Length: 118
Ligand SMILES: [Zn+2]
Picture (cartoon, rainbow, N blue to C red):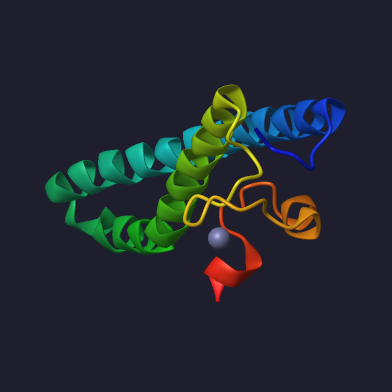
């Protein structure tokens, strides 16, 4: 159990995480749509050489790094929600000590205490 966080505070963090997940899923859907669009254009470009440049430009605009970050954040959100439901939230996943409240408030996805982060 997290000794330092109140029930209300935990509920607030869980709500915040769920909202974050919702918006991440929306962004991810947009990004996947863009990728799908680019793939389609590239396929067409095989037939029509003239579109090739435009299709390549679109492919370059896709930020796969961004997509990866979103997937990582979604995974971190789900893990934090699991820690909340199991009653481990607020405990360092490495040493088991309570994570400093200012760290959790600054980033609710934090899962290590100050000492274990350094
Ligand atoms: Zn620790």
